[in-house]
Length: 149
Image (cartoon, rainbow, N blue to C red; front, top):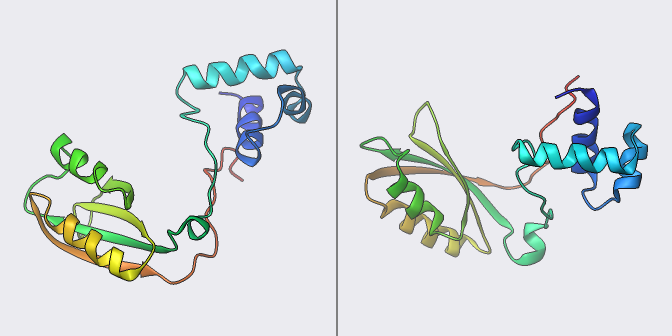
């Protein structure tokens, strides 16, 4: 991946709906060359998907929490993954090193729904405990920096 690819990725993260002509102009390529590079970045798995950034509060998911999930055994297997994926409130799940086995990001409409989601998390086989951190305010969330510096 070269500097042009990194600039393409930065532009796409800013606005993935822009036309290839505008994208190419922003990085010094023709529309066709920009399209071909984006296709290659998709084929290589660098671009995993194109999505829309929705405001969670606007769609009734304004309560966010991070949950440290403790387990009696390794939680990185597929039954655990399947159980977590079945919970619609779980929007991210990460196997971690540290005081717990997993870090899970949960979004709900209310704290009552959060409590219900935590009960379902705790009922997953192998889970021995949870520690929950409720977010009061988010200063920012940003995409991955492809042009560090």
